[in-house]
Image 1 (cartoon, rainbow, N blue to C red):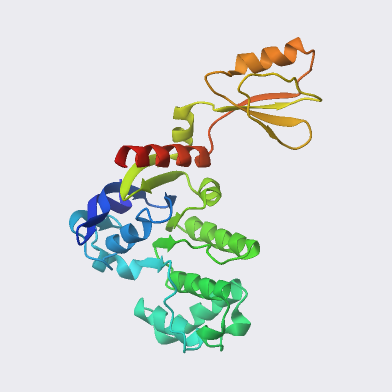
Image 2: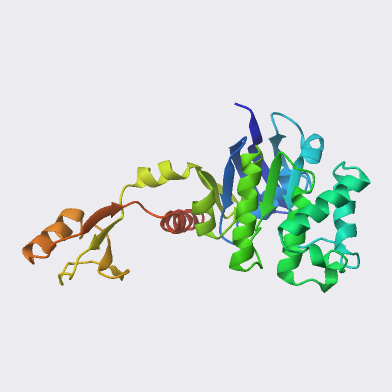
Length: 302
């Protein structure tokens, strides 16, 4: 298989501190891939090192079927976590400049930039200086800049930071369109709901180390059900160890434990004469897995 990105044994140190420790994973062409971890885990440093912005201390990185970072850059779009636009320049000039850096002719770079500004609702701000934009607007301009040359690989570091829900949804729709035309999308985040919504495969790092990598559904299935959702007109009391989380209407979620299993819950309702309209075992959420894996990693490395 030709991969959009392959990382093998990537390591980055600052002095005596290792901030990326022997990380390996691959991203398939055409997928949306979630790269997640808690704040300070090494996500941004991994991305910057893979892209060649920082010099690696060990490991190999290959882009788009075997290219080096330098060879691949004209075919890669990158949205950094920090805002790096020229603040004293007009938005349209910045986009034209960045488009030309990615190999577009001057006129095409401007036309493409203006087209994308239309799509994100910022066309009327094209002649404003970057410093006059809000935080969310600046983030959208950086997003536009990452797409301006129709890249084959799009790498986004905390792309939804500073955006309201409407613009988050707009960005997600535009990324879905990019994937539909064949692009690969990698996005780094600690917002797990975004990963569950958009990604099929994920990599999770904590404290500079990769602790989880693979298909998200398979990861959830491998852990088995950790809760039962019950919907009924009423609910019995006295289930030992039950953690009840009120849902909509007559729905309650019971968290499973050594003291509480699905059969005990079902028997309690039957003994109380309560008719169930729903009884469903639930796989762990990405949030559950994240908390468990990061906590275990910190105990192991602490």
